[in-house]
Length: 240
Image (tube, rainbow, N blue to C red; front, side, top):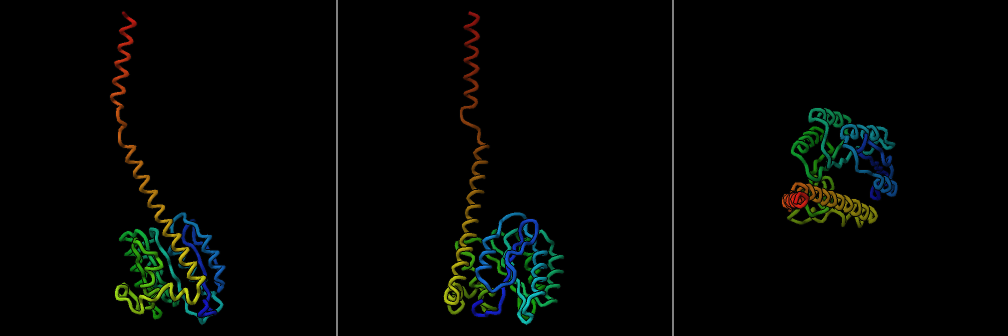
């Protein structure tokens, strides 16, 4: 936003009961950061309706000369079928909206297939991209450095190991141009990584407890037998 002062960014969430606007179009980084901290992880993702709301907001933007772009972060199951997503993609392409999709986390093959079909049909002159980020040791921000979404159309996974100009793009440039933005992005993405690791530990703990519950306690049968023997001895004493 510092490089292009006229640029405006909005923020919304897809989860819960429906799309929620967290920040209307603004060039105030503080307002965007405040909206980011209001995000909640709950409910199901409403991909189609969220994209339509974002497209409607872009239609009513104040600077009509600016390029329209939507960036979608998706890590939840997609309820919509492929046919409806393709129809939406063609609609967004018709009104010249570029859509980049970042899919991360444990992805099902069906989810990946739907997103690939969507991006393939929404591609226009300005380009739309799909970045699939599998689970790994790196931060999401580090993986995104090597994608066309942040690095331009010349970036890609094949350039990552070779170094060069593409390998140097990322938070180093962001830190130089906008240190506050770089710090906020790192902080939010680290929080997301910690959240995923916490959920993973909780799942593993639940599975461990479930396995323990299925194991019979030692000495149950022996304890029962001993009690029976004591009772029989007591009966014998009573009748003696």
